[in-house]
Image (cartoon, rainbow, N blue to C red):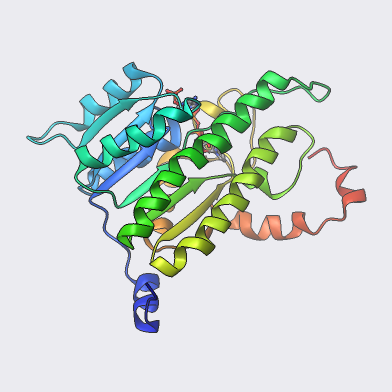
Length: 262
Ligand SMILES: NC(=O)c1ccc[n+]([C@@H]2O[C@H](COP(=O)([O-])OP(=O)(O)OC[C@H]3O[C@@H](n4cnc5c(N)ncnc54)[C@H](OP(=O)(O)O)[C@@H]3O)[C@@H](O)[C@H]2O)c1
């Protein structure tokens, strides 16, 4: 399906209203807060993560009306074989799907001279392969229905290979490339693919990491993520100032970048 020029302009100006959503990695931090704000907008949300207790805590606090606004699905994103059937089950129980947001992610602490394959593998499996498993399902559905939004929570860390976190940066850079390719495939069907690149956000992931630059509260991050995605933006820095900071950082020559403790 090719959108007319008028439809394309309309998509940019008019924020989309979502009735049904999947949030993968919804049991804490950014995914939890996105779930809370989507439910406040009237959206029914399927929440996915490993910790059942946390999913139940969120569902209990949000399912206060007559009809359940939150449906919960315990799942480990590294069990890729489960995804096709689980995706079908969720879309059936939701009665449709307007948006899928992948917020699952890990960033274990890594010492400057540490090369721990187990940690590296976990970051690639959760941050990248899990996203591919879920988004491949969503892409097929949205290409068929010629509608829908795919939102990947990446990071500013994907903009350059930084010395403290070689594989975290790799997982996010690879996620960016995958999402860009999905956007190029699916745009012609009217499907939006949104890459979100947050800087530091106050969540369990950043607890105990000391003073972080331009740290923002999680409710602000979630609000900006939802607003940008509903406007169908392609690449979004959260907050927007990071776009300009990384424009500079991306252009620092490699031999200079090597010398920076960054
Ligand atoms: N916080 C930041 O400063 C920041 C900045 C840039 C980007 N990000 C990205 O934002 C996303 C969300 O991070 P956050 O800060 O909200 O972290 P968080 O509070 O630690 O939440 C991480 C989420 O990922 C889920 N998860 C981890 N491993 C999983 C697995 N194997 N299977 C299923 N779910 C899994 C966790 O659920 P369970 O443990 O219950 O499974 C949890 O819901 C991540 O991709 C992160 O890289 C965060």
